[in-house]
Image 1 (cartoon, chains in turn orange, yellow):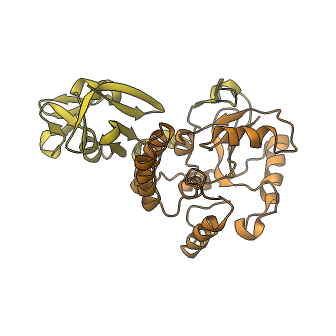
Image 2: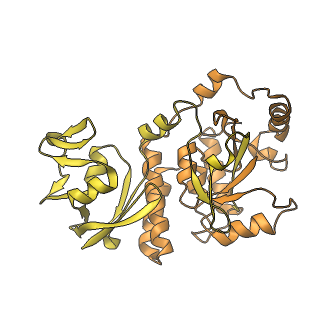
Image 3: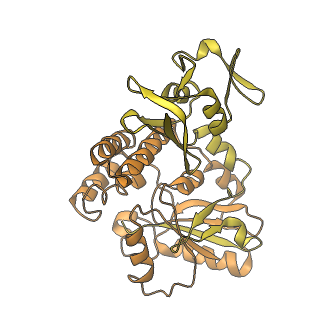
Length: 187
Length: 135
């Protein structure tokens, strides 16, 4: 079962992407995690991220960056084939994609500062949705300060800040994050 | 007077007020929202108590300062007194505990049409969750 979960603040953008801007028929559920509460619970801090869950609801592959193809491999440095082959083996032959020890090794909680940033972001979005622009952006700025390397907060905030998530502001973030050693990024 | 607390994905209006740059709620409201109860010995939930001497600035004239409460209990919270609004995130410890057993945390989220969908709807199947966005 394939389930897509959007982290968009702008619900129309999410609907447009899922329904119009895709060549794949919409035969699967598309859910909305506007407050990032699901992302927080699952340890998701970027897109596209996949999580594999077996028939008994055990996580057999923790959150990992999983590009659908190699279009951005220069940036992601992750080949789509790794996941595609493992996925076929898991679905068709029940071959576990990851050893238990590695799953446990990746099971780390977030740091307190990231959680504070998430609270500030969530507060900012509540204020912005209510039209409290000045207050909302003040709290969003605080979230950005607290989580300089978190993609979901940094890149995910660009649209509500009136900036292009594929433009110069994104590349500035990308360069800073790469210089910091690509933190929080696993395939 | 009321203020708004946001936690666990839902917003609730509770008895409280804003004063001197702080968001304050009544102990009853705090108890209802968070499970933490103000007792003579401190703030308690179940068998766990944070003693009064560790609650510096938390209790203000029979009300609870939400930001100070968050700091004392290591619970991330952001407050905006000008909007009477306090928003919690989960504590790192609670998040770590929720995934410690290796099971996927339960969730319910709206689909594109607003209909609720839960992980439990797909019980007994292999599931591939994909987090994505337009950005």
